[in-house]
Amino acid sequence: GLPTEQAAKLALRTQQVIGYESGIADTVDYTPDLLNARRTGYDDARLTAALSQSERIDRLLTEWHRRAPSAPKALGFCVSIEHAETMAAQFSARGIPSLAVHSGPASASRRNAIEALVAGQVQCLFTVDLFNEGIDIPETDLVVFLRSTASKTIWQQQLGRGLRKADHKSFVRVLDFTASLQRIANIAELRDG
Image 1 (cartoon, one colour):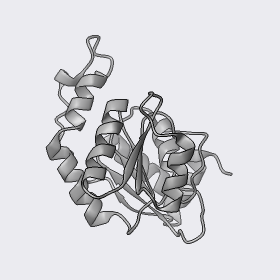
Image 2 (cartoon, rainbow, N blue to C red; image 1 turned 90 degrees about the vertical axis):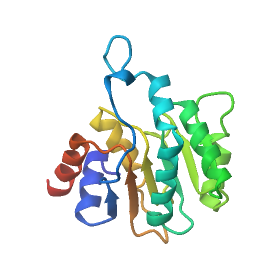
Image 3 (spheres, rainbow, N blue to C red; image 1 turned 30 degrees about the vertical axis):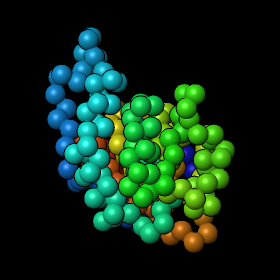
Image 4 (cartoon, rainbow, N blue to C red; image 1 turned 180 degrees about the vertical axis):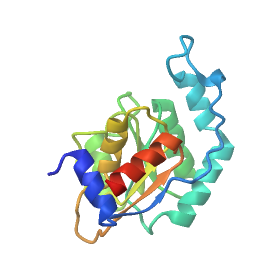
């Protein structure tokens, strides 16, 4: 296939990615309190706590019900194992069957989780740092960004998880809860050339 950036550009230009919802208001206040001790990035524990607040989860669920396709096959990208587990538990408790897939011992089996997603037994797999590359789930029709990343490459790889062609899939919808001005600029750059 095409390299990730070329595939993303083509998808945006040909409207295979529609409804990139980058204007969804994030309830997290990204203050210096969330930075690590060396101030070189976010502290995972503090950021996880901020991203897992009930107000933010309620907002995500509202937007999910408003914007997600019926019976979605979604990937949700999280900041930590705890964040992925929290999201899967909260979604499942509210009637959206979900699993957390990560490198920890409590993770759902990757193969079984993917099979359940493709079969429609679950609607979302919440993951952290596993599905950025080297995974092919062409049925993915919804990508949910729940964490920020300073890496344009990682963002493109995550977006690329939804750009695979599949029968009965004409587009991918993207819900971006962490859009920054740089992320919006990246989308415009891919779309406009």
